[in-house]
Image (cartoon, rainbow, N blue to C red; front, top):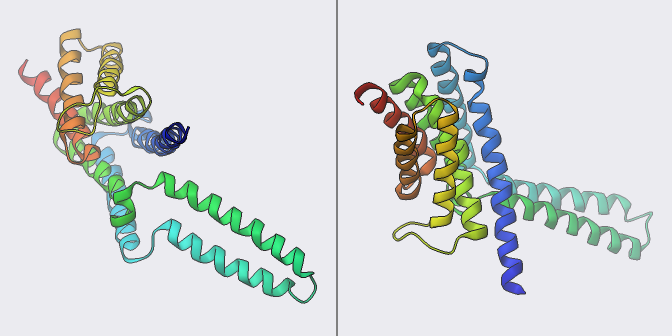
Length: 238
């Protein structure tokens, strides 16, 4: 029972994080959805990268969101209790403090679940790496960056979620599972085919992208770059 509860908690955490991840990826697709020219796409991603890097540097110098919220909650709770002390019975004060403490713990837990371990130590660096990968893809491979963003949107969440729920066969030297990677490969392959890729090219690109996600030290950086580069090379040399 304890093991099942722990597994459910992990899956819930992944769903929360990957929902945010997909939302951010859709935001990165915006320049293609509104059909900006190549220069404005690169400008858009460059500005987002600079803003994200600046925000992350501030986070590194200050407590993370969860820590800051905890401090604010505690300070406000004490202020409320002191205000009510003269006009409220002791029992009611204790009940109020208990409820406020539970609310604090609930909010803290939700934020803690969304934050990954290395983000608690080094800030939200995954967002910066993702924007860096997309910006470099747009710079070097022009509109092939679109497929890199799609890979980031599809492959990353699927490998994590399917791996957590159904993953049984672990891939050596990685944190991934065969079930998660295979599902991501199939879905990304079908996406490319629907977008007009020939099956053999879609197979090659999807395979390369899934391998990049598996073996890179930071998939948010590697996925858009490797996917965009592979499509660029395939289109120009095959």
